[in-house]
Amino acid sequence: MKLFRFNGGRIGLTAGTSSYDITDALGVDTAMWPPVQMVQLIADFDAKIQGITKHPQTRSVDFSTLRLDVPIEWPNKLLAYPVNYIKHGEEMKSTNRADRNGFFMKANSSLSGPNDPIVLPDVPGREIHHECELGIVIGKKGRNISRADALGHVFGYACLIDMVVRGNEERVMRKSYDSFCPFGPYIVTADEVPDPSGLQARLWVNDVLKQDANTRDLIVDIPEMIETASRVATLFPGDIIATGTPEGVGPVVRGDRIRIAIENVGEMTLDVR
Ligand code: MN
Image 1 (cartoon, rainbow, N blue to C red):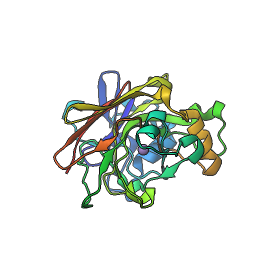
Image 2 (image 1 turned 45 degrees about the vertical axis):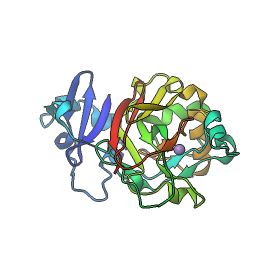
Image 3 (image 1 turned 90 degrees about the vertical axis):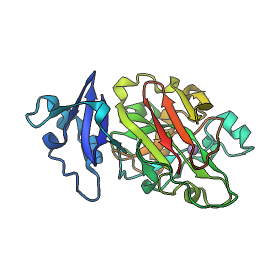
Image 4 (image 1 turned 90 degrees about the horizontal axis):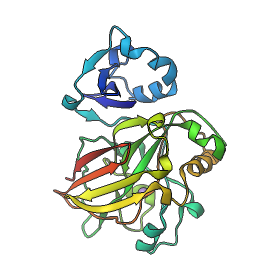
């Protein structure tokens, strides 16, 4: 199943080839603030989704006509792992490695959707880089989650671009500009991604392939990311983990178009402004 937000915060799902607007059936208020509607749905997913496609207030929609919004707008946390591919560490000449450094955080407000532009800040002389990453969405609350239990806490996956201004300021600041975390285009539920440790992830800038790697080469794999993070902080439904980028990062400038595609997960194209 694919779960998405569209047309100003409505909630939809795709099952097989059929797509539905389930906003009214769920009783969702699209104007609610803070906008935690999707987090609430994920937190009680099995009960809320039961029979939803047959609900009298569910409507069929033509997915191709929808304007998709960021699928999760207001998570409790947006975690990310640094230098989680050997070759990316080498290209950055970095001594950091995810297995030694653990995770960092990006501002939740850096999240943006598949139709939102990436807006570059005015930082003369500085490079702003794309990082192609798989995004994990947590489905079940947990603390001290064991490696063996970790995948049972995953709700689904989405494409994620971890944008960053290169430089020496705190990483959380350089990665937290508004629109620096395009996420989407929808969440693919975990049952549709049977092996998240074997996904090819690619990123193009202006149709030139820049990044092309497989999640099997992650230094810290998905279960270990969840184990490590949950040893520090309770993970909540809707929390997002950015898994780290492979080699091939590089600068983007205004007018570029970035396309990200992850096998079994989806793809989206973003304008850089
Ligand atoms: Mn990253």
